[in-house]
Length: 352
Image 1 (tube, rainbow, N blue to C red):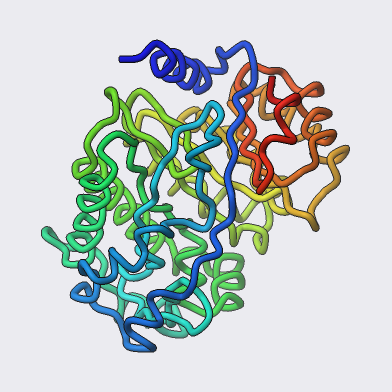
Image 2 (cartoon, rainbow, N blue to C red):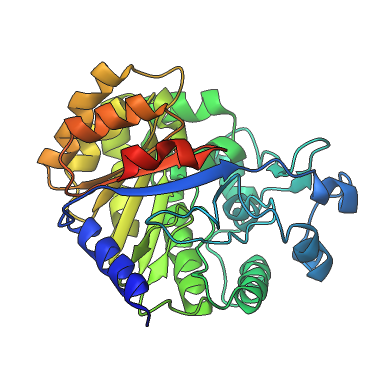
């Protein structure tokens, strides 16, 4: 093992326990590739048979919305993402998917209009040798074969509320969780159980990278790893999130050694106290939204995360001076920045 790789692995190991003495910096760029899936299949409803070599090759150079820059990874690892535009978790629960003209994604159609219709139409609980999971494993194996020297990440684990919003009308879900949470309790448990199975199957398929695994953000951990989110939680109250969604997230995190939770700055405040109460969650990613709280408002929340002993990954396209201000305002221990930019060289001084 080269010394620089050894040092990078040690730096990532320290980050998860807030033991690093300087922030980590990584650089990424947004995907701007054409809608390959639509060109292949149009608006056909997808089946696992559509996940083939033709689709893999069409997406070979475009595996994620945001990709670590291979020539400017910084402290991060280049992690070639194998999603192929598929909303995997929605497909696995049974949502019909089709590619959309002008986008790179296959979008999910609703399973029904009520919790009862969800139960009647979904594929949960999933069975052994599930065809959609096998299709995902095929892509992971192909990606692994093409990039044997890079850590292959897991596909994004969609949030429980996000999956519910994909499968049912959003208003129905929001009102139902507030007024009839018991109607959703078993569904939420089934979704969480499905997510655990899918993540574990991916970890079994991917070859470990120096004894650990990587996330799509370019972070590596010296053990099993999980990245989840709940983007739809911005429509919930803090108490509803904590009572209905957080226990299911906890039930997922307990299966893995290292867990990162992706949150947007616009909804972080709704979930923050609940997230900090979990001793199974080591790191919170805060993606800074242009229409979210200003940095002055966000800083106390980030400091609260650090005070709770959790690490922070700040993902943003902030200017160098703004990144410098955040860097200097936070504890370097357990701090990392993922900067979205087409000109990483302008951040060189900030990242030193």
